Image 1 (tube, rainbow over the protein chains, first blue to last red):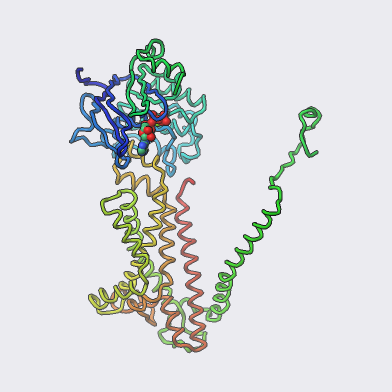
Image 2: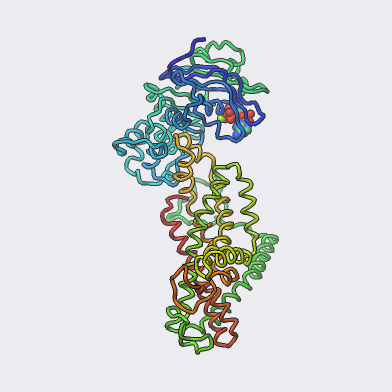
Length: 258
Length: 305
Ligand SMILES: Nc1ncnc2c1ncn2[C@@H]1O[C@H](COP(=O)(O)OP(=O)(O)OP(=O)(O)O)[C@@H](O)[C@H]1O
Ligand SMILES: [Mg+2]
């Protein structure tokens, strides 16, 4: 297998929580500027896998990993790699909206600049740009000074997307970003993903098969089956849904288990 | 009408203006008994408190006259009539020494709590154990320690710096343990959000975690101040008592409210004892004022929750 030099790829990736082997031997390639959906039953290691991709896994006490994550051909777990630099370039949106409660809406959008010590020429323009891309500008453009906690859950999630966009990441990881949202907000987030994928690589975990079919170009199916979670198969989304190679994938996408 | 039936839904005229209903739980015998027991318990607990406050106010107010808060005892003795000499020097002394102690103990306590909870450094467990042990140190031992190390060892004088140091030793465990509890309840999601944006641990702590618990840290500081404001024994061994207004931290002893109370009680005459009660009243009012002020400062710039 030749080594991909663009996009994001993993090779023989494993993860442990203390003694518990949660994820085993995942090798996959996320091509540049595509959307990949990660699907699979609860507990199969999707979140763990996602957190390995931007080095968030190591914040969990006693955790461990093995294997490589190649970002534009370079291993992000290499000895001389600064993890904070990686997290700046590979953004993340969490399942539960987590805006900074002590900051205003506007401050939240540009919080990453301050936290990661990135300079910008014009904050106001950046705030407007990011909120527009996250589909939130129309709703909150006039009250940027209001506390972030005054927003609805769906709005908070889009604010978190805007906050991740402010650092202009090359990759965006999303862990069930719509699971706490109403259908309207979900639709808007999906539109946002569509637009972002023009110049951004997106990996999104979802339990919603329709959503996976709607937003993703590729799909990857994970399953644990008692032992550690493994990648069962990854392919173009249409193939995963119409003619999967593995019978377990077919069972899952047709809702027969999981 | 009491009940709503679907059958006559058409017949019910919407009432305007609305009759607003308040919800009350159905009264039950057992609930009434529990409520009653609770009030009795509350009264039993409150009674000593109210009687202490009332006694201090009644007896302490005797010592008050127009200049009581603004004069010192330089030209008066404790036995003098209650229209000359005051408690001003003790107020100033207490404020200075408690403030200095807080300036030492509050930042140190917060840093210690950050080390234990955020950094989880190699010695976190040991530091935690040490802090816990420290909170059991009797105040007179803290005073004795500073007395031998600083008063005997370095300055060769009773002074305010030694007093502040003794107080800060007593304040530190309270601040640390409270700050620790406050930091522990910061949800992991909040730290995750910051780290995912490429923040270092230092940035995350300073810009996300600490601002988010500001009011809790103010509480930690207030508890620390309240813990030491009335301490007498360590001050008797370190800053001693002084009859005069003084702001010198090194050269001479410094008065404080607890030592003022203690000194006047020791004299024993009616007027002296009244002065002691007066000092007690001032001390209580001061602590209440300080906590209220801290609450206002801590709450004002907070934007949520
Ligand atoms: N912090 C943790 N400590 C210990 N074990 C964990 C931790 N987080 C996850 N695990 C374990 O790792 C395995 C994978 O969990 P993970 O959260 O990655 O699953 P998931 O596919 O994201 O599930 P879901 O769809 O429910 O979010 C599970 O067996 C889980 O119990
Ligand atoms: Mg998950």
